[in-house]
Image 1 (tube, protein in one colour):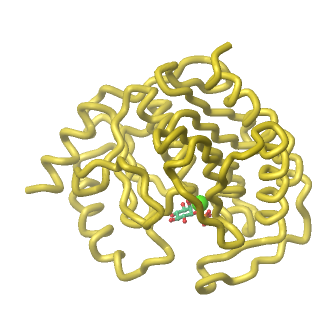
Image 2 (image 1 turned 90 degrees about the horizontal axis):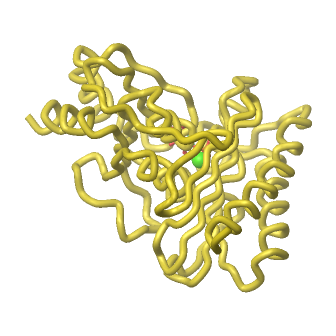
Length: 261
Ligand code: IPD
Ligand code: CA
């Protein structure tokens, strides 16, 4: 096993342990962050603290960029873990079983390992740079079908309602050029759905790095492409929020043709 594969195993074991906290959660109370659409629970904090302490034990000196409790760090450091303790917190609060734990690992600014675990479905998506992407250990591949033969997934940028017009204008055009539209409520799972070929494309106008760091590598290693919605590159990784578009090869070309015209 090479170094990155060992990091993947370390993350997988920490994430699986952390998922027990998520599955045993009860009496979940939402606390508003920037507003009532942007919420956190005690379980988001517990899982983040658990993952940080487990990963620090195994990788002393690593830096952490996490969703909760105001984390920031040098994204170009030698070892950076990028953690979303519960992606899909609104689903988690409302009993919609569509949430996951997402952990990315960047080496000197290069996304090198991605792990996304959906404990409700017991689906573990993972990727290592140059090693392909897998679902529960079996290789996965992005769809090569045209957008017109695939489902399209999107995120509604709920914390940035000023982007709703741009989102829904694009969606209207895309809707008649795909099989149908889905909104699952977890950006990390949306990206994994692209990687697994379940949807042809996914876009959202505003995401944070912790939402997509792991999924980005999983899509790329599955043969898909990830850019910003305007087609510009997502590298170098940025702590600033930005849009994300992920798709299989032909669906990406179709998306560009439909949105750029
Ligand atoms: C959110 C989810 C949601 C997406 C939001 C994200 P959170 O993450 O991924 O699907 O639409 O933009 O912020 O807040 O549940 O970790
Ligand atoms: Ca998130």
